[in-house]
Amino acid sequence: MDIIERIQNTLSDHRIVLFMKGTPQFPQCGFSMRTAQALKAVGAEFHAVDVLAEPEIRQNLPRYSDWPTFPQVFIDGELVGGCDIVLDLYQSGDLQKMVSPQA
Image 1 (cartoon, helix red, strand yellow):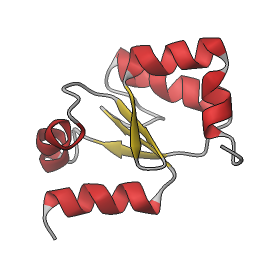
Image 2 (cartoon, one colour):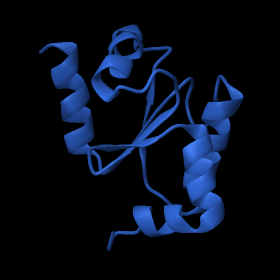
Image 3 (cartoon, helix red, strand yellow):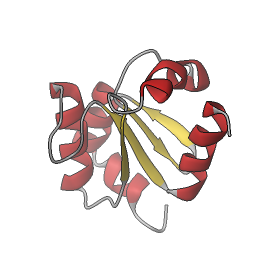
């Protein structure tokens, strides 16, 4: 399976995916930490992928998503954005709506 198929399979297997540096328990950058915290704060059940442990994903996801930096949050297979966008959505209350099962 090539890397693009792996990315697509991850996105189809999990409703909410956070591609981050490190893990939610041990983030390796502040942006990834704040993004994971925002998702946790709204009670989102999400799958995290450590791009530092997956160099092929780290190298190819920006091409796939057309988003150059990490973290990257996907909901229902669609790119939501990175840290700033997720935090803005959190502060406006929209993130809660987006991650709810009815969304």
